[in-house]
Image (cartoon, rainbow, N blue to C red; front, side, top):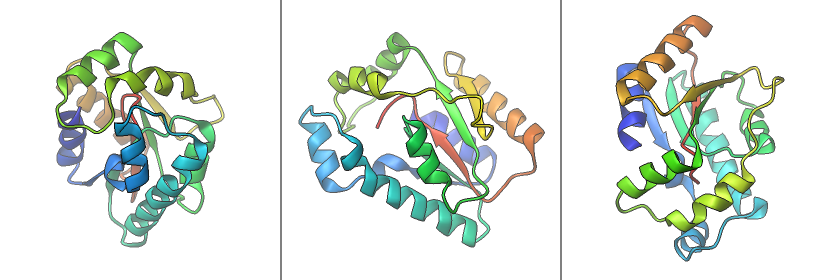
Length: 169
């Protein structure tokens, strides 16, 4: 998964910011112990992500802020005050995401929390016109190429693009 994130940012000469690195220590400890986060837990994390997005926009820098943004209200919070944001909705079914999680090493969120992530997940609705969906079942190069093509068609690169991980916190 990290390869996909870095590959896209690298191909577009953009900054890569992993939302997992923005979690407060309490969130990391909670997830590492196998307990899912709730909305109150996620609020300080969303504030940090929003601040990072704002900072990139103020410096007119292009970046990929990769985060789960599982609920519409989380995406709405990221949109507040950040006018040049596009969400790349990297979507996969439970078995595929579980398989990808099993391949990653050293992440604080255990695989046992994946079910809670899917239970929390709210797919984008038609009114979220700034969300571009992508199926992650394809190869790394295939997904990256489709993302780049879609961003090129949508508009010239903007100061920030927010990505969404494969249903992980």
